Every structure is written in C-alpha cells, then in structure tokens.
Image (cartoon, rainbow, N blue to C red; front, side, top):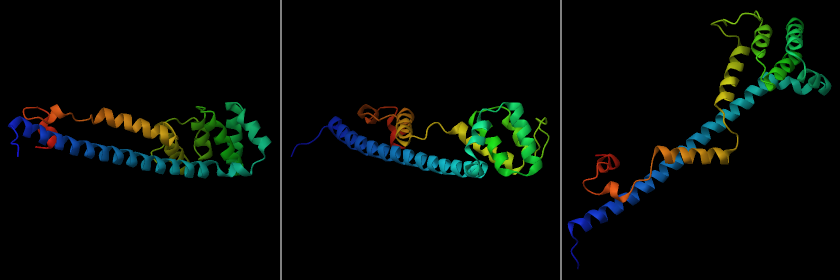
Length: 187
C-alpha cells in the first residue's frame, strides 16, 4: 500500500471537492433556468389574460372595420374613442385601443383616459387608477420586460448569464493556500 504525500492528499481532496462543486453548480444552473422559465411561463399566461380582457371583444368585429382602424390617424382614434365612451360600445373601444397598442402610438394614454371616463388632456394621472389604466399599466410593464417568447433562446440566454455570474471552479481554486478556497467551500 502506497502512502500519499501531503501534496497528493491535497490534490486528491481538491479533485473530489471540485467534482462536488461542479455537480452543485450544474444543479444550481438547472434550478436557475427552471425558475426563470417557470416565471416567464406565468408572465406569458398573464399577458394572454390581459390581451383577452383588453381586446377580446374585437374578435366579433367586422374585419373591414378593424382594417380601417388599423390605419386610422391619432385624431380619428381620439374621435372614435369619444364615440365608444359615449355610446358604451365596448367592442369599438377595444378596437380603438388595439389599433393604438399594436402600432405603439403615444395617443394610447389619451385613449385610455377617454375610455376610462377621464380627461384626455390630463397627463398627471389620478392616484386612483381606473381598472382600464391598471390593466394597461400591467401589460406595458410585461411588454417592457419580455425579451423573447422563444423558450430555447431564453434558456440559452439564462445559461450564458449563469455562466457569467457563477464561473466554473478550478482545481487551483481548491488547493490549500488559494484565496478562493474558503469562499468556494463555505468556510
């Protein structure tokens, strides 16, 4: 039976610790990716719910009317929003909002105020947001945060981010005397 030198013992121990750390790192990486993907699935589900609540009635509108709205100018959209608010026509209101939303028009904020029963010129915004304003605020927040719907691309982005945040440990990091050793081993 061969007796190991102190250096050989240290290296053998460091090899085993490195293996354990790499396994833990991979498990952490998988948990990180799974958590983000689960979160994004919930965000996408909520976004779909918001789109249905805000624009669901547009499915029943004549396609030619939707096409007309899709190219209407801001003044025309403001007029149609006033008509929808006065008449209580929810389908028209949603179609007007959809047109502005899909084209990312700034006038959408005025349209929301008109359809929520407020003053279209009031940029201060009430502290007591209407439910329409609250729903759009949430949708805008989601749209700002959401980078991609492609789960494979998102997963790859998460793996790259994790690799930057949590670098692979090296054998040298685990050898006695290394300043990283105590940090990696938690003590």
